Image 1: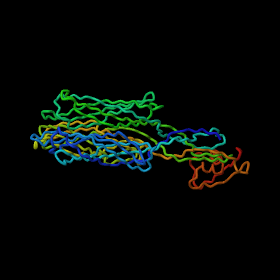
Image 2: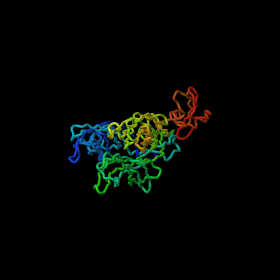
Image 3: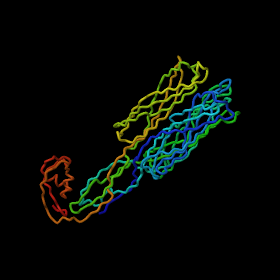
Image 4: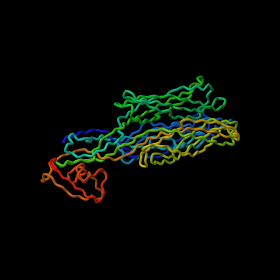
Length: 510
């Protein structure tokens, strides 16, 4: 028997895991800086320079760039900061993972806890959340059609699946010199994130573009606290052979290292440099024809089917959530709010039919001038919010990865010591459905062992679970013949107990 086969790359999500871990270390205050009296605030930016699978574990090697703002133990209690890079190496156990597995991993700082050990030493505990998704990719050859169907009865089904067509990565750097036009005394804190992500496909390449947002809080020689912000465009070309314009691009941005330092005093500027790893996987939506069953009235046919996992309804979408909040700060002096850091977190996610609901929190840290202490103080507040996003083809069993990041942060003081906060949170939702389908891997035709020849007629009473296909295959007849002789108009509708005349024909004769 002649048939046509096709090779296709099949993908499915093997496992998902969320794991929290801590990194602890001590920071020694440099000799050029005064002792620590009290800690005002701390923040950090995480970067990962190596990810690999080894012995059933996912290993992450990276670091976190830490800024600890403190009041100096001197006569004026000046505001200063100490900076450090804490390295870490973490192994995450995941069932079923091996060295050939494909994976994605996002890492986020959950909390930073500084503690004064003495005037020259501060201990740090940094808590992380890691979200890991493991993929299994397999090339499969299946039979999609039979060349000669003149004596073959066959049913098939066409389905749409998502097949990964390629992947690639590139490294892009972002550099800038930020002029501050002040006599810079110290950098107090930095906050970095990526926004305005977009991709374009052309000539077997994916053009990836985004902006690295850098917010810097610094203090001048005359003890004035100021902020400066810049957006550095980054771009990278990723080669993926054979990619087409209508494919879905799953793109990730990861900081690999971060370097922020003041230039010479005379320059009145800050140098910013970071390196990003941009990774992209492309998925095509393909229609494939699956043979569900076949038989021949003339010959015995044996088919081999394999149950395989596939991805369907792959989709990447974005949505914005605007949060407006009035925060009372009774001890606020002269409306002096210097900086605000926000960290959005998903507390609970619930997949429903055609939508996803989220319960989230926004952790807000406000740096302001206090009328009580006449110093910079911090106020922390958690804002709870919920969101529902409409996503077609989503169901309770869908695989969904959601990343939320701040897009814009705006604030102003409206008087009466009230802060008006306006934050846009960007939701990036990557979803798909895992499905199990049967693919025919081999068809073998053999001569029939039947010894009877010519016409025969069987009277059959329909049983529970019967279909015309099952009945026709059982008696080596055809659906059309059974429908014609019994006057059946709708071949998909037969009732239990119906009496049917089944024509049996052998060697193509009735």
